[in-house]
Length: 234
Image (tube, rainbow, N blue to C red; front, side, top):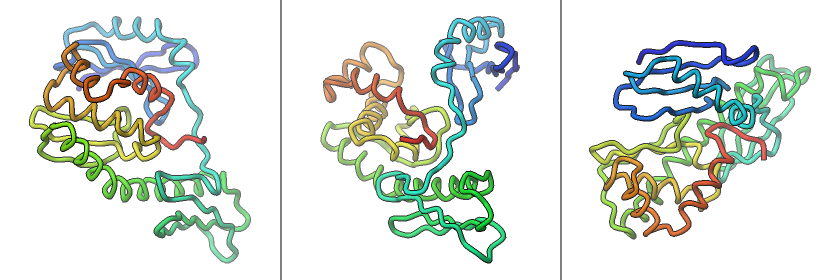
């Protein structure tokens, strides 16, 4: 995928990607805080840059500082993070139990230290992957059977800018960070992807089908904008 990087302003860089099959200009912010614009392959880079400039208020509102994971923080649906200061160790370590993520770190360090946070986030991702494999396929299958949406397969992984995807062969991929959302918004994403098994693109027919099975889909679509697929402090 071709791309170029530009200075949006004195504080912000934007990466503009040209993508085949893309018909609209799309703006997103990655979990690392990078501003990303995707444009059709035939479009000029300056079109993407001007689009980003027109959305600077949105970018400022949705940009985030790196999250510091806290002791006791919920990770997904049934894990909590324990940050434990320990004597006699020289580097942070982690252990996953049925309902806890235990991170031990040297007694002279702070829990906010980058090394401690890196271990906590890796362990948090592992916990989310386990939960996603256990919970999301089961719930997707329940909704598919209930509403008559056959699909071929489902898998879960970390998608850095989307909650889910469905391809032309009806293979569905779900973001492990869905487990950080309330269940009503998880169901919205699952039904959204199941609707793609009938209509691939977001046209009027797509939204009509989705609202037939989920009448408040528009409200849930608006609510999910408050979340991003990375660890957020409640």
